[in-house]
Image 1: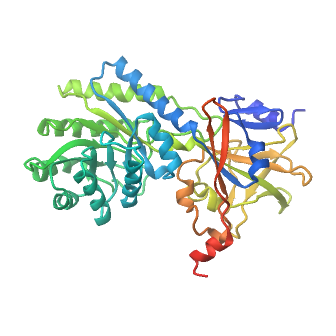
Image 2: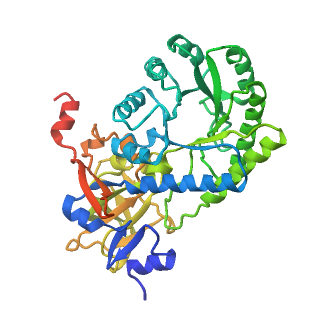
Image 3: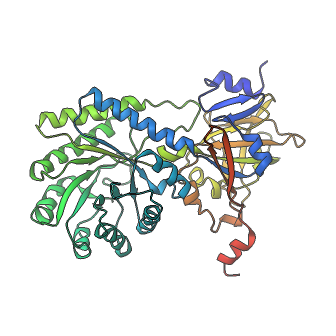
Length: 463
């Protein structure tokens, strides 16, 4: 009978996969020796494999380039990085190696942009698209960039008041975008996104506030839906409605030349993950071209704002199974030496799944388990995988330490978890390790951040 962990994976998935391979009974991720990371830095730890960021950016650029060429599309494609996915400088530096543009969400983002400008990483040719609901500090930061000659900084108008606020702060002429308040998925609690301006109100808003204003040029229409880019009726229907608005606007606003279709490419959350990115890009380009050609309107330049897709698959977290508790005749709890609530908050808050695999002992027998975190909170657990809502791991053996990895965790987890700040039950934030390649293509690693110390938390708490 086949009852080793490797047998379970072999009979359930295609394995090995591009990024996951085995060396003996130990897992490699992009050929990274994960057990060597554990021996060198200890666990728990988080890591970021920086080359994956550039790889995904280049993949997306190739998909759009191929579709544009195939359909003889006259517009250009521009890749923007959505900063809120991960604000770390090492992420920005890696992403900006690839001739990309930036999308911001709040006032402090502008401080980051200015830092990158000072380092020579962002030029006046870089598009800086400023989304989000804007208050004084954000307005001031955007206006300062434009007043300093960064005319590719484009505030995306989110509400009717914002354009008047910019009018007071910006000295010369400037470009803007308008965000569409898309209709939400039918399963949502509400009908229309709180972000942006309603479909029917955009053209009247343009005619009333922008058309006769000599300082303002409408350059961009912004479209995004929370479910992301998916091959379903809801996505295609919303995209078509967006294109209708673009065409209506273009007929009264000849300066309009760009359509921002937002982000939302999914990332791998299971070994069974399948998504035809190239087909989706091809079909998006095709639909835009067909619709514009029918109305005899020039096709727009295309902007995307990929965040999770850019950085998500570069990240991972490694924990040690430090103990097993059998609470009844069916439930075994493998206890990790950290907390899911603090280190993978999306798994707790929105039930997000990540690729979960053991790091070692792939040739050992497996068992069904639940995974528990260290906090005294009933919600600090992870108990659902693709195998019939269960987790299977090599059997616990106190004499043979087991390490497990969660992969593709690079987007949002550190920001939402509050890295460097207070943590639930004061469980410390794990150390963070950066992995890169040197000029000869050899893997290198360095410690970016130590595990959080007690005195750092106590200082925040006022002790």
